[in-house]
Image (cartoon, rainbow, N blue to C red; front, side):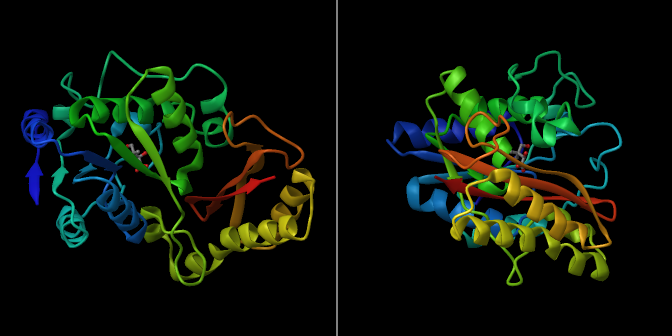
Length: 285
Ligand code: PAF
């Protein structure tokens, strides 16, 4: 596996692959990789001739007081996982390589100006999706992939990136990949590593709420409000949990909905102690 740290290295290699007629898949990550990321690499591997993963903890998507400095990092472990799953190249730039102004600063942002980034996670993380769109569009410009692979766990991010790709006419196919869970149900996340043993047990309230919501829908519940209320009550039974939001929104626009009609995303963010975790499911009605 090629380890590239500069934009030029990536461009030169991708140019070579493309001139040989090969397709390129991109899996953007912030590292500390787990089986969720591995499934993205596997899907990219099955769909593209060459697979590039990026490992970059992007400062512009973290707000003040968030976990930029403490975000877990283990590049050696990341490289081992990427090699095992057949990535051809990892792009691991410095902050200055990605943001040449220094200090993670940039004068130019890519930002969706409708309400999509203001819903759900955007209510408490107002600059988050502007940072995500900016770094993802930079990665698209650097790697010029044919396809890019993102996890459904970050459902709002996935919807926003699809919208950005449409609005900015990127000729890139965005592939959403299913949530990968631990055996007991907890959605895989690099942030799970912040949890103490007691918090790890408490964190199961998220997946329990997802399964409860899915069961209610399977039993024929048509009211998204009723499903959300039942999920909230179930999470509130866990003393270590503090709900940021549990919401049902249109799966494309992220606008709140009250009944299941078309594609609906039921999503949540819940603090377990000081760790903020997210989970979700999609209802196709
Ligand atoms: O989902 C993530 O890990 C990040 O938001 C992403 C897409 C790699 C951008 O930094």
